[in-house]
Length: 404
Image 1 (cartoon, rainbow, N blue to C red):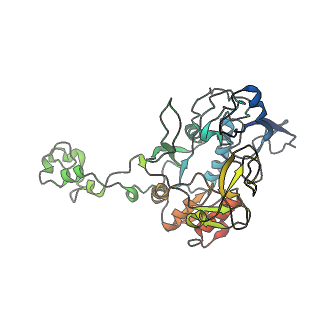
Image 2: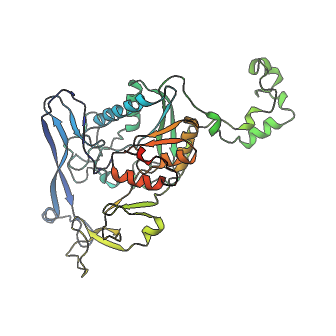
Image 3: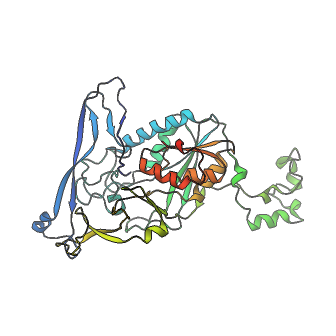
């Protein structure tokens, strides 16, 4: 989870408590690169390129134990799961009695070094402010070890099950084009979990809407004139009383309509094609964005001076500059492919139903719902993401005030 420009919330504790907050501080260590792009190896030089800043990670009430902060930046996985259960408890409250809930959430690893060291988290996890054992975290949570896979998806699924949800299915989203990982002691992760949960034991699920095409061998077998003589098929005369006692399938083979949707969905990820300037609010599509000028920025020191002198440090990144002069952009880093959302909406929501996304982000779920002629409601704590979603949904939206 990343830190959003949004107000903090109070989680847990007692509602009647007059909270007395105590800030949770931790040290964030940064090591800057040298002119050659390599870290200093000598201790005396390395100390010269290291900076340390204090970072606040929420507040804890000394009276009731409540925590004040942003969702996803909790000090432990158990805290994070507990807060998500609270959110989805409210989703369950407004969900129809026969409604379903599709859940997708990413996982993370505990740092390979002692928390607080500069190597506590590497690569992708190092840029994730909510990672367990990240730089500056005081301790590794109880029950976890360095390099452990935290297992957030299943921890949350079991917690929701204990909270009253019916856990009906685990779907594997297989990614043919996964994010590369520079790891050599485990496989590169190329999948995510999706869970199907329901509010009641009997719920709406349209299996026919998402049937997969029947295989060629199935079509060939059940189209054969000798199919009634094949032992093991549902048309076999020998097994008629057992397989079809009421004569319900005397017509065309039911198998030719397709097979039930399997639990492994192979869908490629897709890049996000919109960028929003955080200064002026202008939104660019991918073509317009690539036409903007590129500027280089120092690591924490702004743009490169006009004379091009870098003063002994390489810039940390190259960014586009908006027409207003700003280089701060809002992008959503967890955008669903539309093909992943389509079967969820088609199978889980009738045409007269409403799709609710409590973490709407850039609006992909609502966009798919609109294209499939379903009503939709999107909620997000970030005003910037809401603005981005409104822009994407403008051609389809009739009630943009649904975003909050």
